[in-house]
Image (cartoon, rainbow, N blue to C red; front, side, top):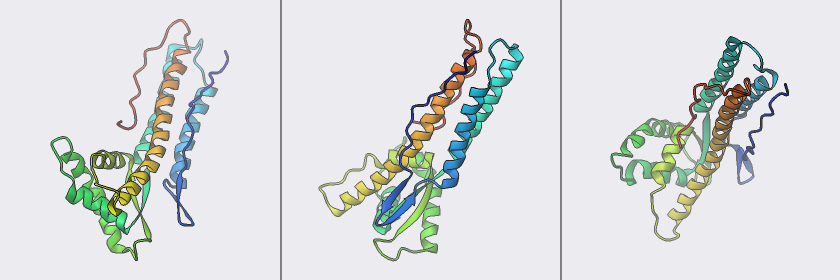
Length: 221
């Protein structure tokens, strides 16, 4: 039987930003390679294995192995850290916004509390290595969940007019957007692979679609 062709149709976004004359990585080479390798392993496994005409036990084993590979990719994605590069004004704006300016209700207060550990880590890093001026940039890490929380919380913030604060707000939003594109790329890859695995398993028996467990999405919308 012809091997199934896997197509994810996802284009990788830019993984770095340029500030001045320097390129800064938004995700480390190590994390990129780890995620890409796990995608490749899943695709290769499906391309080189098939259960058509095999015993049910063998088909179940193939599915279990594919799901284990997908789970490993999902875990890697959840643990991946992304990097903000903020100058002093951007850092102060974002941290003051989250800790002092925003109003929280019953739906958002717990998101804000979840971010407290991240902000504590950021604060410690600035104490260890202070900004030298408003041009100098420093790196601050966050995972996909924290970045989603940050955007969710500050998205409703409003600024009046095109003041310096407005431009700082726009700069922070752009940097969140750049990282969000990378998260979306790998999350979409996970969802596409989950669909591919289900189709791959179903193709074991053309006359009868296998009802396997649904693979959960990696990150929340």
